[in-house]
Length: 107
Image (cartoon, rainbow, N blue to C red):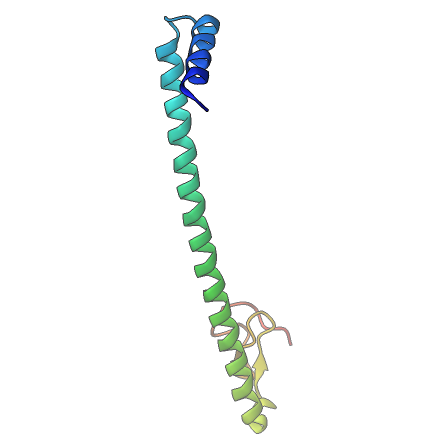
């Protein structure tokens, strides 16, 4: 795009909008660019938050797997224990609620 083409574009804009409306048009264009940049920054922050949530979920899943492995090792004690259907935590036989997440235990 050469200087001649830019001059033609500026002249066309002047004819269409008039010299009185150009400052308003420039201000609106500047605000639009600012909003787009802020939106892009928020989008990148959201992606970072999503990655953090995925890491946390993976860590919780590993905890459940470790607890399941501990439960297999204690097979004798598991006969008296009740496992939570929500989080998989091992609870005492007479417990009505899970000691880890607080959800009701099904009997």
